Image (cartoon, rainbow, N blue to C red; front, side, top):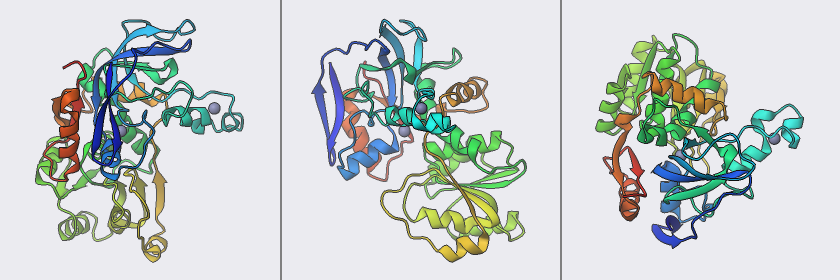
Length: 344
Ligand SMILES: [Zn+2]
Ligand SMILES: [Zn+2]
């Protein structure tokens, strides 16, 4: 079996692995689709050595084998990759911080002993059984492959300071921004404004329910001023993931408003502390998700409140993975979410 691995700067290699077998507490999943994430693009652009289990972390598939001690899923079950439930016995769990379980954290980063030596850009993958959740029967495998990133956005909005009726800004309309925008709407924002330079992505944001989609800078500033009587947005979600975007998110918020950091910028970000202090900005930051949030997010995709199909712009084979990654990394790609089908 061959898996596609990002092995260096702008380098993808097809590496041969034996057909995986499940650990006693593990499963083998036949991968249906694996989405290409911003993290994969970062790894490809930077050449930094990422843990091999990290690249290709957005997959759906079907359980093809399970270990002797697994009862949560069976062969033939459709599943999505998820965070494991809290362990109950690590130091964090025992101190009442089960949401920050250290065992879950390491396994999500692919640093536990059951971590596979590759990600989901492969026809089969072996993981801990705790790391899969049964796919909602209302979802296709393509939709299921988008559950992981949509749950990142779900978690961020769920823990943010959003209140019913708020004027909310989503900065950046990539897959995470477009997901966040939909959750913000579902959570009861009064108006949702998407700020995005790419005109196609602005159109997509409007089609998915954004009340307004504008370019960054003056246009955004004027619209937010008009909608808020000059005060600024109640809450701004940062979904760009570039260093300049942290301060620009705070610049759009009102005094006493809030900024939710979702996009992950490499390195340091310049900020203007006096604006943060003068505005008394509250900050929430969101990393990944909790185990129980996968079922919640899938339920709201299945009932149509959240739409993921328009984000999925193309499907490629493993052989087409390197070209798809190069296109996404170019900065001028027309793609939003590219799924890899390792069976093509
Ligand atoms: Zn991802
Ligand atoms: Zn724990």
